[in-house]
Image (cartoon, rainbow, N blue to C red):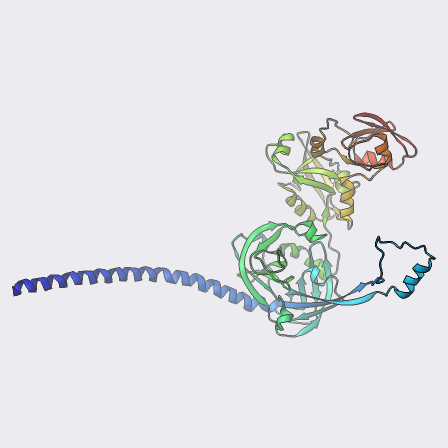
Length: 494
């Protein structure tokens, strides 16, 4: 009996030992797996952390706060008003004089407005790169360094189109941020945004550092947001950019400036994970001119263009959608002088293939003014090479573009050149002329019976081939005019 008990205890002991051994072996294997992977993750975390710390300690020392003051004059009108806008009283009426005597118009008042932004030192002698919208209208600029020193800033050069400016302070041997190569940026690459959001509210001159990745490249903002600024080819990042960050640098993990923070996209006024920066390579091309106070010149072709769709490519007999369609050619522009015409398809510019409008706009604007380049266009399914001398982009480009889109209103008629779009819209079969897109009610053209969709091919027996012919002929017209359209003849009275 005792032998059986001893055997039973021995068996239980063996089983327990086996279980403990298995557990210990499993734990050892698990610990071995953790030990192999933990250093890897630790290394990545430490490496990223060390890189951000290094960026903050180096590039961060070259980031400044910019405070601006500018004066706005606001006229204060009389405190009374009339329900329908204009006074119902004659000029010499007693009641009118009564209102003017007792409710006089106050003179204009001046209001001081304060702005905040950031900048980055790019030269040890006190040259600072920032946004034009930060300092462009300033009467007074104060630059605060990270160490707390304050200097009076002077605008050396500014360019509204690129939204870049150079501010100079009287200081020497300053820390400088190196400029990187924004063309080598990749989506997903880590970047650091440095600036002074709410810096003066926080009462601390040291810049703020936020970390994120390059979310997208070659982004464009609507012209309604940028007005006359060229917010194209921007870097998009999720590194937090807040009010006051404008003008500060976007830096890679090497500490090189790859962009200048310019804007955030928000529906609430605060940060929502979408910020934009101007690629530093854009700034590099004009920094020297800004420092010298020279006007920045941009190449100009003088055309309105649009991307090709599959339907347009098929219509013009193209094998793909590469290239841009010329919708309008401005009068006396480099394009018109070189022989570029509406409905031409630009496939190459200066021996470089053009795939879309963004590429054409960028390459033309960067081309030296006065330089002659070859432009390859497809016309009637044949390639034609034209020599174009690049002009300087005019100041009133928006006005020029709008007049190119539609003709000046003559006797109530507004016209456009024939394009693939309006050919389809109005089902036009004519090959020459201008199409009527609007007729003012009760105008001479309306009374004559002209309608939108009519194609004007002759005026007073002079042929109309395009918008240029139409403008040339209508500008000199006097008296009644005989207008021939695709529906017949009409007399439009003066």
